[in-house]
Image (tube, rainbow, N blue to C red; front, top):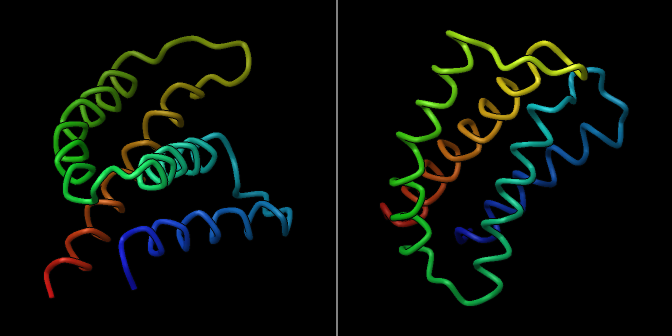
Length: 108
């Protein structure tokens, strides 16, 4: 399975959970889907997986920092007390997963 298909499978897994009405699907999961969908869009536009991997490696420390910042001092939001933490965590989770998928695909 190639990188693009592996990303698509991850998105499909989230979408299946959402379609089944899972009470676990929330802003965290939607942020992960959005992050992965952006990667898919780049792949569809012809960006090479290796370039995306390099961008993921650059994004990772920033995303970790955002999560740590939200854990230490949450941004208030009327929608949900931890909304911004969920968004940052979802993006971080998706970034880590995409890195793992790339490494699994190209480590062969």
